[in-house]
Every structure is written in C-alpha cells, then in structure tokens.
Image (tube, rainbow, N blue to C red; front, side, top):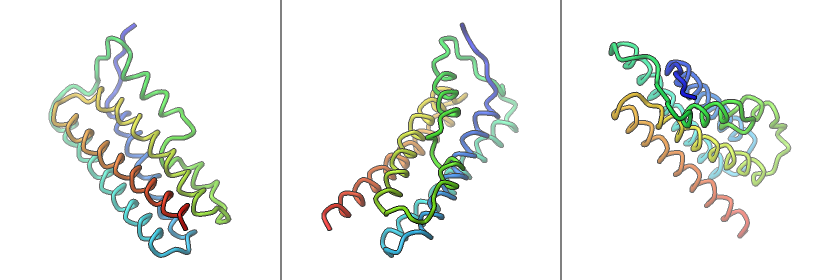
Length: 165
C-alpha cells in the first residue's frame, strides 16, 4: 500500500530531535566534572543547534518554493522508517532521556545514552533522506547524517579513552 505524508510533519520531527539532542548534551555537560568531556558535549550541542537551523531552513524553503508539501512513498519504506523512529523511545535527545538524567550517572553511562541516541538519529535521518522531496534536501540530510556519524565516532573514542584510564 502506498502512502503520502506531509513533509512539514517530518521536518517538525527532525527539528524536535535536534532541539532535544542539544538539551541532552547541555544537561550532560552540566553533570560531568571532566573539562574535556564537558567541552565535547557542549560542542555537540552547538552542532545539534546547527542541524536544527538547517532543518528549519529546509522547511521554510520548501514552504516558499511552491513545491509539493507531501511525499509519495509507493512502497511505504520511507514512511515506515520515519514512523518507527518517531515512535521509538530511543530517538536522539528525546525529552525522556533528559528527564531521566539524575546527575548520578557515570560519564560512561552518559556517553552510552548519547551513543544509542546518535545511532537512532542516523536511522531516522536515513528515512528522512529517502523521503526528501528534492536533491538539494537529500544532500543536506546526507550532510547531517555524516555529522551524526562523526558524533558517534567521537563518543566512541571518548568512551574508549575513559576505559583506558
């Protein structure tokens, strides 16, 4: 069965993911004593802010372009990815993750939360890229995916360095 879904709703989900991710990283920075790790979390928060701005621009450009505001998904593949990730409790920066931080977590536990969140955001954005209505939008989402993969690599490197201490 094919589906048509509203790109405005999809960008709204992406923007919320980025907004919440920035909050998660800022909260994590407050809860960490290590200055190097705090700086890493704050830098990631800034990058998530930049992703938010990109998605806001993309939504605005699409709204002002006169392009169709819905995407035809004949095989339901993109919409399935997006719905699963939007409904997932592990989506990057979800409010529940921020609220669940007590301040008693170890740095390793905080990084683990962030690693899982980044993985889930990458899956969401892969679906978003498939659903993007233009090559320019697909390219922008692809750039964000690469940055999120960079976040994942940074977090894993930091986790490995902590384990070596």
